[in-house]
Length: 82
Image: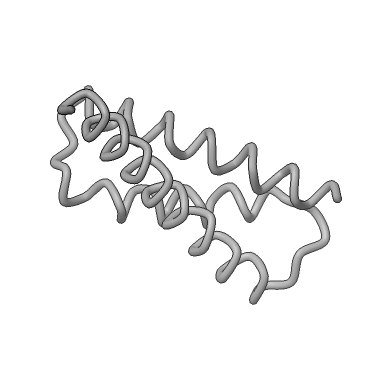
């Protein structure tokens, strides 16, 4: 249970940090790479994970953050367009 909550919080932080990166001039094409690096970096902070869990968990949460943001953004734009 605790690890699930941690991954969710990490995903939210990654979304926010990637948006900050965009605001300070990071090109959009590098945002998924930043999210990936942040995901692995935050996974390193979680106690008790194996190296494999850190790498794959970080990749999954980083890229999931990108997908979640993109999905919400496209949905909101679609609703506003109607």
